[in-house]
Image 1 (cartoon, helix red, strand yellow):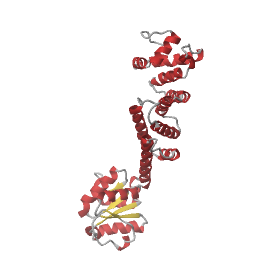
Image 2 (cartoon, one colour; image 1 turned 90 degrees about the vertical axis):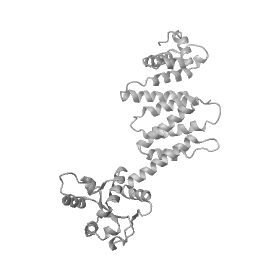
Image 3 (cartoon, helix red, strand yellow; image 1 turned 90 degrees about the horizontal axis):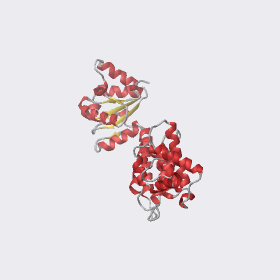
Image 4 (cartoon, one colour; image 1 turned 180 degrees about the vertical axis):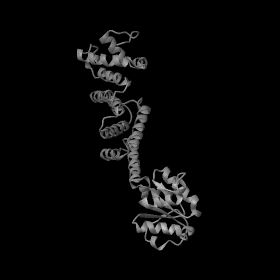
Length: 331
């Protein structure tokens, strides 16, 4: 299929050139495929031949209706040709005029009073799939926002509805939703998890579950990493370990460098999940081996010093199990 075969051909009067140029430019900027002689005939092309080819190849014609266009022989010839070839003709009512008989029964798009409303309607006609996707994206973003802002007095909506909406959303919107979740967690993670309304945490969990369900190719390590941090906050350490291990698995599969925070976070969860540690006893050999391996890998990151300094439990575990004091903190 040629480029013009999927493009909507602009038919208009020269007196309406400014409006046609503005409309075509706005439609192109919004992703619609349209053909306008003033924009799409390249240097060296014969003007009349280019217009004839574009008209023959197009599947749709946008007819700009105005007093001057309906009196134009060229305009009416183009409209008649499109109708005879069973092309879709989309009348655009630019100015009050006597609508041609053959177009009176065709639904028009009215631009006379409200340009913005007219272009939205025209875009829905030209790109129904894009319009449907825009609505799906807006719904997913709204439901995700409601989940995060939910409270005990104003609980979130259906998790299934949320999951279905995120599944239907575009990849770009899923990325925006994840950034929203990430930002919200960073802003609120210092709140006491045992005090206050924690409904927002459950909202984040619901969103992350829905996002992970869409990652069928297992490419989004960041989903699992953040999920691990949220689950750790709730005290579900086994699940937190599972999720950060999945993040490590995806990172390694994709052969990505860095992201050694994942190992540090897993070591931290393993320590907090070790009953021996909280009894001030050394961990069993298997646990020591796993934690030591994770800490050793994390030690290679330039942020190790900050991580180590911020987590007293890691320092205490190393002292208890590896006999390493604070001033000698290489695992």
